[in-house]
Image (tube, rainbow, N blue to C red; front, side, top):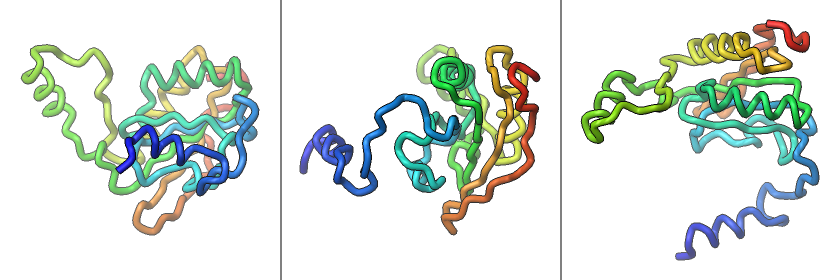
Length: 173
């Protein structure tokens, strides 16, 4: 069985399934930043995106953390993105985590409290609301319009919600 690095290198070559072109610019063609969960059932193709279309920022639950906000600010200011899409999905394991139990278990095992945010949503609606609020409150973002979508892992359908949550005027909150 080949090492993970060998398999990953082979999968990332032009001509491998799903890799038909190599983007030549770090600037996303769609000027889009996608914030989503790290779930293995989600990838760019799920959203109809190709390599080079968008910056994809992933973490447990698609939580808009301070690191995600930092990445969006860099993307907007240096890589010309103007749109933000939050993508949640059904059957999200992160939404089933009891935050107090998780934090307590980590502290019990290590003797230290996590220095990073543990905030996880318990529903897609909560993820959209907290993510949108975090974007709206961030003074470092130039564009604050947030669009949202929900991916159903069972039907493999994406439902895009068409109500932008905040103003898309540069610098407005």
